[in-house]
Length: 306
Image (tube, rainbow, N blue to C red; front, side, top):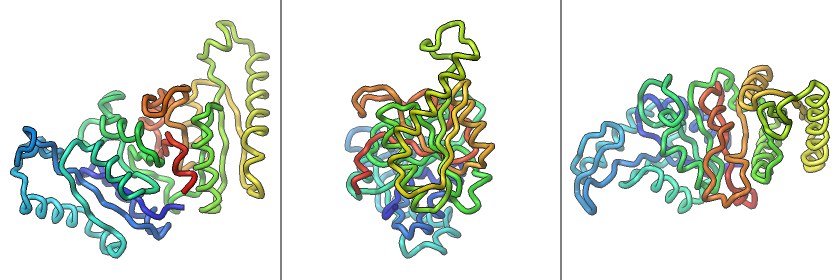
């Protein structure tokens, strides 16, 4: 399913969990792994000085500095590289991290980008945008391949991915996420759990929602899943469908824990607007922030044709 994977790293400890997933996934798929680090942002135009993205300190840009950074990456990922060195390329670039990640992903035609929710060390109890780093937000928004986001160590990923949770809001954007989830489940040979949460905070349900209304909405959602997704599954029968009511991200996380999910696949957004303009959806952001397993953000249907 994946022939080439890009692992974007700052080389700091906060990227240790994404590194494990990236190397394990590449080994399982026998894929080429691009270990990519952006050295820093030029201080002034074409300056020979850069601001190191890890330390924030200014460094003189040159072959010695680049060689030193690559040696640091070799040391940081020494154990993984020993096991998977023959198919790993370490690459560096100078510039804005998100721009360079997207540039390399397009140039190399990668099938997946693996990265942390944030590439800088810090207090992960801080809220939202401080955790959801600007680099990740920009990459997830503009990438034409799935972006696998890892925010913390995965306690259920002993066999990498063995229980995939696909969460849908029935939007057009969710169609690509479903194709990704189904393709991954077929490729791995693992169960696919299709989940929808009836949003009790939605204005569509009205201010005085009765239990009868909720049950009717759940039944309607279940029917939509049966009509929209099941016919696309062909002879793949290892799946379950579940619909519940509540706050979407809360119900998604609860369901993922119940099923011991080790991958959650979701659309990057649900609004019917141009892909390059869509900001990350609130539900996806909340799930990434709190999920105990990796979350795949799918924003574009291009990868399906590959």
